Image 1 (spheres, rainbow, N blue to C red):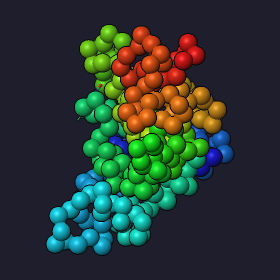
Image 2: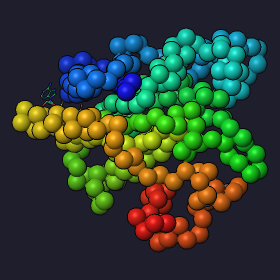
Image 3: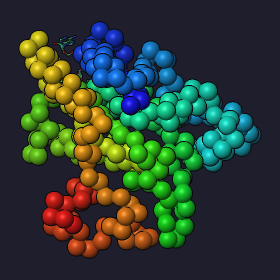
Image 4: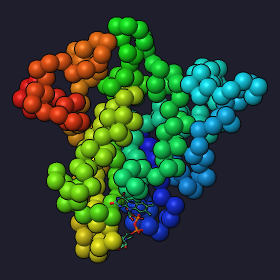
Length: 263
Ligand SMILES: Cc1cc2nc3c(=O)[nH]c(=O)nc-3n(C[C@H](O)[C@H](O)[C@H](O)COP(=O)(O)OP(=O)(O)OC[C@H]3O[C@@H](n4cnc5c(N)ncnc54)[C@H](O)[C@@H]3O)c2cc1C
């Protein structure tokens, strides 16, 4: 497989740097072709702004969606954005790797998403009408590709458990898994997480590498998180509310998982 790792940590000698190097080596040893977008090393520009649209008329107010649509369709996006889009199209699998910062991804990685996910590429795809809401959530440009997060967190695993004070990790990652990855079509694999990073001694570090290696060895076969497809019949049109009777008795983000009760 072709694997693209988009990596966001400013320090190569960090835990994340070690995990990144391990991941690249492990995947290459298994015969995969790997490319890395090391956002800090690239000096990635995080803000989505007027400079991204090379043909924009500066006399007009900036309408980001219209400018993005035009720039993508007319090949007048900035070169760094086009290059990342090419890498995404090349990849069979995408890994986003980052430390959890303020309960989400570092700003530089969010900026990568905002800039690279152009209108007509990752959103605004397919028919948008009173009876259809485009090709998204299970369809879209990345249909057939896989994606996975590798995340480190300072907090304990219990802090992120069902009754943990930080909220469930599944909930915190839902906007990334379901919004950023599933929306434009990726099959989203369960994340690989390392908690309590400040107390990571050499023995646990080696255990974590073993566990990560096992996950990477199965990157092509691991079952994705069973999110419901938008256009698969589970949602009302045009309200896009889950149909009555599905995920009955459940609430929150989990209702968008196809139930283990067959619903
Ligand atoms: C701005 C900010 C916001 C944050 N927000 C959150 C949050 O919302 N929730 C949360 O849970 N945490 C949060 N944190 C903590 C953060 O998630 C962790 O600091 C981060 O995940 C640790 O990853 P690192 O690569 O920076 O680790 P490092 O600091 O590089 O390393 C952590 C430990 O790993 C070990 N280690 C490192 N490299 C190696 C190696 N090569 N071999 C063996 N052992 C090694 C060492 O023991 C080291 O002390 C935040 C931190 C910051 C700076």
